[in-house]
Image (tube, rainbow, N blue to C red; front, side):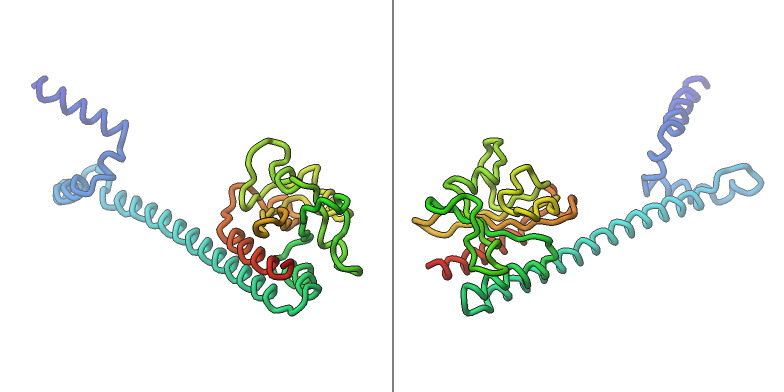
Length: 239
C-alpha cells in the first residue's frame, strides 16, 4: 500500500506546487473532464470545466490585447509613412532654391509636426554658426558648420562614428544649430547627408519641444528614406 501511495502523494504535491502543469495540458484536461462525469454529483470537487473556461478567457483577453497593440502600431506606422511621403512631395514641388528652403522651413516642418528645422552645411570659408540662407525669414534656416562639424555634432564628443539617423535628447551643442530656438528643442532627429564627392558634409536637424518625441529606441527606417530623398534633391540645387 505504501508503495502505491508514495508516488500518488508525490504527484499530488507536484500538482499543488504547479497547477499550470495540468491546466496547460490539453490532453490531460480532456481526460480529466471525461472522467469527471459521474463523480462530481454530491461531492466537493472543483469544477474543471469552469476552471478551463476561466483559463481560456484569460488567454483570449491576452490575445485581444496583443492584437490591439499590433493594430495600433500598424496604424501609427502607416500614418508615419504618409507623413514622410507628403514631406518628400513638398520638397519636389518648388522650382527655385528659395522655394525649396521655404517648403523645408514651413510646409515640411508642419507636415512632420516639428518645432525647429535646420540644415547645417560644412564650410571652410564661412564663420561657424553664420546664416547661409537667403536674406529674410529663411536666413537662419541654413547654418554654417566648421570642417568636421557634422561628425562632431552627431557624435557629441563620444568618439563613436555617426549613424545615418540619430535620435536623442538635445545636447549642450544644440545652440550651434537652433540659435535662439535652442531652449525650445528638447529632443532631435539628426539626418546625416551625403552631398557627393568633393562636397562638404551636411546635416538636417529636426528639433522638437517634446523630450520624448525622438528617442534612441524608436525605429529609423522612415527617416532614413527621408534623408536619402532629401539629399538627392539638395544635390540638384547645390550643383
